[in-house]
Length: 593
Image (cartoon, rainbow, N blue to C red; front, side):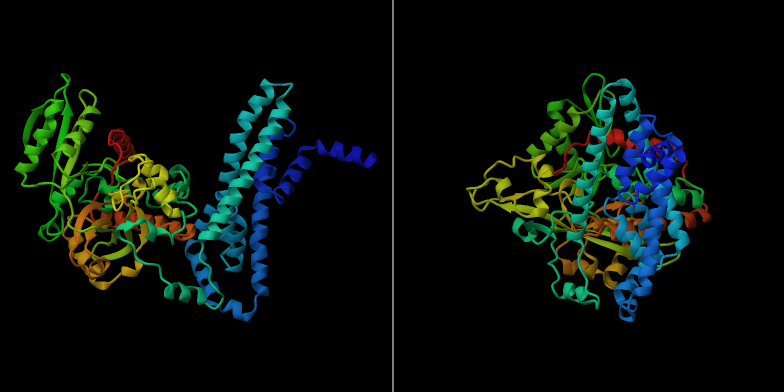
């Protein structure tokens, strides 16, 4: 009894409390943070001791995992130490180890394999320690103080039941953490291809290569794909946390927030945000123009008297809501274009507001919808573009430093799923491929999934080559060739001031793409473009972040080269204004086809 009384007395010492909380992180880190915040909210442990104990416990625990990995490396046999797999691990941690350490802190279930793996791969201990301190400080601060504020308010507001409510919240977050952690870890393991120690895994993968899907593809051909990658449907505000950190570091390194804009000095805002597609098309030289799909821009404005002004090619047309379709038809004819056409925002992104128009009736409906959504005095700018003659589409990412040859850093094949009706079952029932069922909500947003299509009827689920709209993106790295590189480099050099971005191109077949033949350019995207192969449902999270980090480092480096040549990047305030202006426009674009 005297021992227990002594332990209780010592337990009231804040230093002892901090040590005990720190030790509790060795059992379960996030629940320990919640528990520390709960005790601090109830004024049982001083906030600074609770936070400090938790933070130091997490840091020492992470360093312990790294040390265990280092010690484990000494126990490996010579066969393992010389294996290609360990060699790849070592090369990876040398290039991207810091980013992996930072990222794994925010993904439940990833800390143990990444931190011990970093030790086994002999990552620089100093870099690892810096990464662990930064990641632990960010994560601990976020979780601790987000829970502390509401917890303290609850405890002091409901004095009688405050403890019970806090314990209930603690149990809820603990269970939520366990559920999320198990699911993410399971999905990560399911989507990570295995490799044997002698490298047979990669050989088998090459021998059993999956088919290259591109263009309109029947539903059944997607059934070999997993439902999604681990991160594919994470909310952007969560997924891009590491990118925000990298961007901040690059801004400090190069001493400029808007430096990516200078990567493409010939494009408005470098294509980072708010660029005009038509202005890019119009600036193309004769070589690039041969590959561009014909297009023209028009502006639509709603007047205070609820009339509409259509402006295109220096001419102004006045229209009412019911006559706007007819006037658009006249403008299209005057530009020597005909159906089928594509209508899309001039400053749109991620496929927002893209429509495929096959006849005058569809044109009329679309234009009335755009016009009806405008407020008085507001205006929008759209493009009419000729529809490509080919069905296959790919995103080809191009990077070139000034005075050097350009290269292709990513190829993404775009597959447009379609369902063939049997006259008996609904669209939802016919949708069996896991990768398509995971996108059911997207497809249901623009069509009735309860409809029963006629026997033999082909129903396209998406026609816009955009991941956000439900298009399936697949890594097309195997199509890299010198012929394609030369063709793309020749086109991009004929676009003034263009060094970094993605071309969305159409082509008859993957063989044509690999040879750089019969290409039709749908769109040119600048500094804000992504290497979209990362959205392949088979993609691994570390490989995808590595690609994103690499491309962001390139865009800053190219911007720095162009800054030396006299191009001045915009200020942070200008970037913020452009971003707010785009968000205001994007709200009116609507659902894409």
